[in-house]
Image (cartoon, rainbow over all chains, first blue to last red; front, side):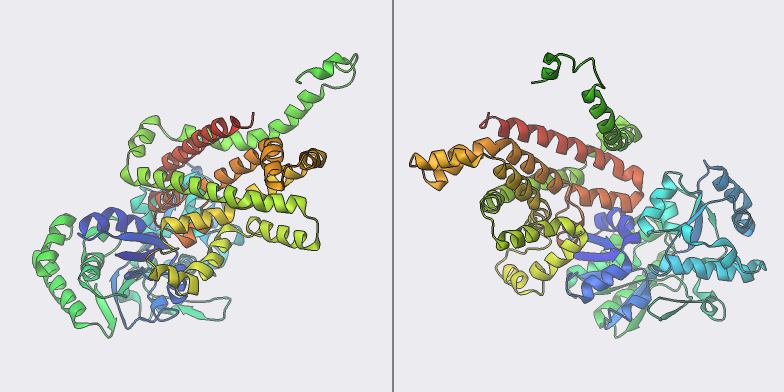
Length: 296
Length: 270
């Protein structure tokens, strides 16, 4: 079973999913946009695909159906060993932008033209301006020198070269970073803030395409439907392992779009019944998996 | 001979000691190489290192790396030496074109090299699909790893061995030929032994480049994982501290393999 997935899922998949499924799986991860391009170009032919941005399932990939299964949130990871990082941690969720404004904290982020984390950082600051009632945080906090490639951003942060970095919650949880948790209104994790709020922000890519703000949503589809890929997909989208690795499993997940094969949709009906009936979001993965195996 | 310059009167007392100056200048570069390695070794507690090296995933990536780099180096040598010899002994406009082609993989960023290889050998290409139909896929397989490593590393054998062959005094070859030996016997008995140290340098470079290859390998064959790919995955999973022990192991294995290569290869030629 070959899974091609977004880089942020790497650890959760290899440490959480792989031991939990009976079939041998190979996990390969790249940036979500790269994953989509590799498949669209015919260079990879995985059985299951999981991406960090639903938009990529509209283009360049356009599968018949997909399921959204988890969310993530923006946080500001801060290094408690540097003066700037400490100031940011002390300021906390309601005042974190103040040390950033006085310029004494070096912040790292990714390129909005290159990856979703980059433009989501801009959305977050635009929303923060309105939420905290402080004018124009985007322009006052952001400048070019803060931009690093996504992978190098975390090395810079870990080696202490920068005090703080805008990151996904799961990265901070998996790697034991200290971080400032942001309110739901600005962290892009909660779909109930989409209408009239997240969606009021936008960013225009160099290609001219405009991207609207929206909740972070991981989505997956099966490309080769059989018993083995079904069982992997089932754990992938409904297993509680995601929670252990810092992803957010809202009540609404999993939700499906498109023409879902009946075998897959019955999977979700029983899985959601299963989850609510058992009502134990932190149960060990093995138990959940055996429940699902029985249901299959 | 070391120190032969002091036999000539005056050179050691007049003017600067050039050998020390050379070391001082070279030392700048040496520091650039050594400091990151020292930092790497200091950043991993020995306990962490020992705990990781018997991880089955790490062991299997180390095995894949050693096996694939050895085969790639062998292929680079078997096919690279004839090409180097031809380049060294031919001087036509075609020679320049061929040399340019040989240098091409050195110029391309490895990731781009991997993408180019994918378009030729990947699924969807004529060669790739034929190989898959024959049950011998050229991507996501050991063959894919070797293909990527050979592409990136073999030019080191060709370019270095070409220079070594060129430095062989052609009058030695003429002498051999005039004694009735053929081109092949002459190459084997005269040219190769004289060019030996230069060739060994090329083979060493190729092996080192192959075992450290990441960009092209990642595009062409993420599986089976080599050590560089495993380092990358470890970094993606849990960051630098998680990747350092594997990186350390790669450095130790590569250094060990190079020592073995030199010991084995140095014997027949000296």
